[in-house]
Each structure stands twice: as structure tokens, then as C-alpha cells.
Length: 147
Image (cartoon, rainbow, N blue to C red; front, top):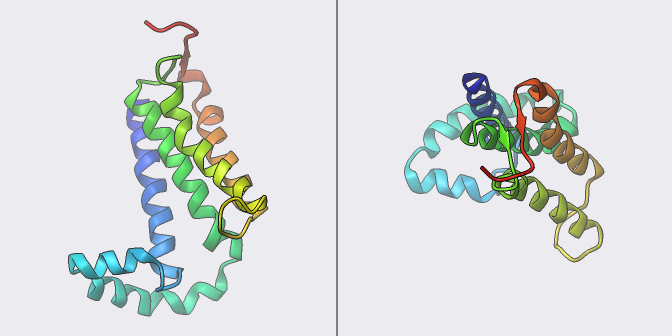
């Protein structure tokens, strides 16, 4: 089961990253990072091919799905690290990133945080968090006490 969690983590992390690299605006900070580490030519070559196809994908695929994939990836990684155990000791670490993402989106809705609130982003954050619990529920060990 641990191997499956690791594979799910890596697959969704890479897939979400490829969506960003392939189809998102070149104005994102990550493209400056690519330039800094010297892989901008490789990235630009790939984008010359993929950018022609961005019109084929719905907005939710390009803008909300990667966030959900990354939350799913993070949650799988936490379960991998904690050996499928959910305890009082590790529950903070399992939920810190998904909770931060959800609070950030709600902060955008209330204008406490700069950005554009999107209900689909919020939905994908929730699905990304809940899906590992649903898919792997039979392999988790829930403890109410620290061991």
C-alpha cells in the first residue's frame, strides 16, 4: 500500500506540474526559476508545442485541477510518511497544507487575501483532501491516542 501512496503522490504532483508548465501564463514566477536554473530553453521548446492545444481544455482543467492534484499529492505523501496512520500526533501535518489552501481561498472570497475567489478551486481543494481518505480508507489506521 505504501508504494501505491508514493506512486499516487508522484503521479499527481507531476501531472499538476505539467499542466502549469505546459499551459499556464509565462508571467508566473516559476518561469523565472526555470531561467535561473538553466532549463528555460527546454521548457520553452515544450511550450511551443503544448500552447497550441490549451484551447482544447476547459478552464477548470487548466486552473483548478492542478491545485486539487497537488492537495491530493500532499495528502498521499503525508500518509506515506506516517505509514497510513492518522493520530493526534500527525493530524496537524496531514491537514496543514490543505487547510491553508482552503483558508486562502476563503480569504480571497472575503477580500482578506488578494486574489480571485473561485468556487471550483475550493471544490478541488476539498476533493484533493478527501479523495485519499476515500480511496485508501481500508488501509488507514486511525488512532485517538499518541503511541
